Length: 416
Ligand code: BGC
Image 1 (cartoon, protein in one colour):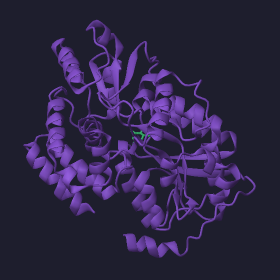
Image 2 (cartoon, protein in one colour):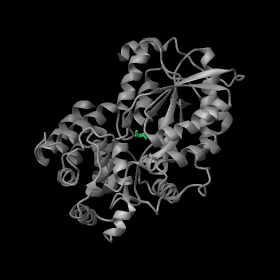
Image 3 (cartoon, helix red, strand yellow):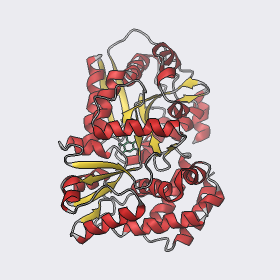
Image 4 (cartoon, protein in one colour):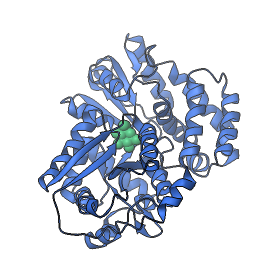
């Protein structure tokens, strides 16, 4: 498949120079299918429609984008790539390497993207010194979303350590509620895993194991403890968790059926979409023991080579995504923070303000790390290998933490 794509690349010398805007269409492949995500997407659609660009929607459900990437592969190999594709981290670089993506450098230079997009994001927006993607946001995975009424009723404060987290989960369970709202899908298990690795081993361990893929760290006693803790968390999930979508788990917290959800800040989009207010109806706090650190992922839009007539609309889309006013309007609804550093903080709610401050602090102290679960720590083959082990362990198919660690070392090695 890779060879086939490479052979297509010679034909694809795409230079996305800004031209006069014509009535045009963009076909956009994305996985923003939940209520909150759809509300955020509407901000983008409306923005473009106001500029005379028609939006052809191509949604493929599934957090983390694995299913969307499968559909994309099929479209590209049949010679019909969509105009623009939502993409994460290493997937962007992978497609760039195959030479099938457009060059946004002229637009980026004209609009000064270099100066306003943080280096951690540019690492994935650029290939061979060319801008190949427009970053729309920064999300992070080390969050917990909690029902405030349940916390108040049980006299709970946001936990700040593992032990406090377990004590809070016990209290919620003891009160007859579901302690942890979770959906049993591999990427959701892996999203929890990001935080458990970070809190158990600290940032250096996270980097060594998840980013450097150091075999010693992956096979360490610390990693065994991580799996022990995953088993512990599994004990707080309700029996109906297999296959549940993440937004339905968010809804359980929103409705007061469950106390907490461990999920990236796209969960905030669900609370906001349900008319809930941070600090009044729900709480957002960093996964206990991870304050000061951020495991991030950034949604970026990659433009594919669709021929000359498609270019003006692609440029409009890229420009719209990168405009400060759009980044503010969109990210307030999405739950993420702007990919630009020059967007005013004041318009954001308290969770958004916290996310922006945390991101700044983490970036300044070298504690901003790519999320394994969401494609920013390692390429897809490794990510999928981690997904398999984490999910098989969470579901009891891998019986012990010893075995999980052995399989993790082997699977990560085989995937490289
Ligand atoms: C994306 C988010 C999305 C979430 C759930 C993540 O991989 O970065 O934008 O909301 O998946 O669909």
